[in-house]
Image (cartoon, rainbow, N blue to C red; front, side):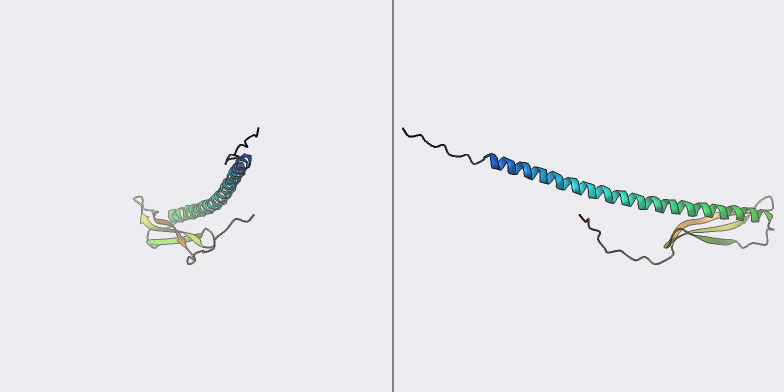
Length: 137
């Protein structure tokens, strides 16, 4: 008697191995993309933290300047000062903290000040950055 050969199934052991390889490869690609995204977020957060630190250091220097102004105004006569004034405190190479104030007479006969503006101004014109930072492996 002759034995009939069974037809080989369409899905064999080789195709399941290819499926496993494809899954491992896709998981590796998603892992690399997640790593690159996390690295970029970390670098961005470090940059923002250093900018915030520089801003608050400029705010501290402005407060010290206002403290000396307050001490000078306590000694000044009501006719000796201009009504509006201000100053700039550099934050970094491109930004400065602009503080504007006006001098007001007090009821007790002395002088005091009122802050009219406290804002960050650009000290240089803005130049856009069109470069694209691509990951290197």
